[in-house]
Amino acid sequence: MTLRQQWLFVGIIVAVVGVALSVGAYVMRDQLFPVEVGSRAPDFTARRVDGSQRVQTMADFHGKVVVLNIWATWCAPCVVEMPTFEKLRQQVSDTSLRIVAVSIDDFVGADSVRTFAKNLNLSFDILLDSLHHIDRDYLTTGYPETFVIARDGTIRKKWIGPDNWASDANVALVRELLGSAK
Image 1: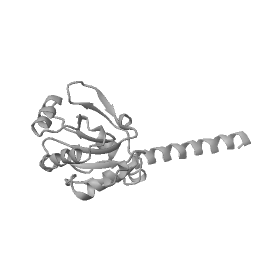
Image 2: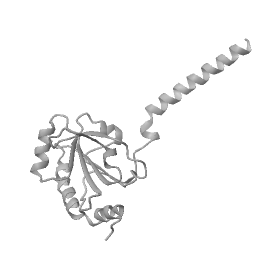
Image 3: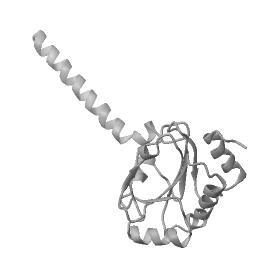
Image 4: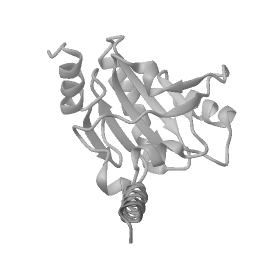
């Protein structure tokens, strides 16, 4: 075997190992790069249900404290939890707080989700991702699932299941992130 053939063989082996590592990292990305407290909030894309049909992404909320909720109209715990987000919004009137609820409903459209939100008198951002991309991006494990995201884009709290978002502890966390603790 010539020196040139040896280097070609080494090059092929390096390429095969590189491809195998890339495929392995892709397959195991959930374990290698989990979405957890302290990690950067992944971007998402979802459509507003306010009739504008405008698409929003995480980048639209840059510099804001974001309470991001992933929910569905058919999810009973989600329905119970929704009014507590409205109470949180009323208790913390700072315009740097954005409550963003992304519905993953795939059998109803934006009109139904909008009517649902209207019936609950919700006045925060309601979005729809009927293709469930946000599930993949945030590695959700159930509904509802909520992420409190600081101004710098890091996740400060992750909560699986319903919670009282108007509780003293949650209000204090949001106010702390806003820099307006009282």
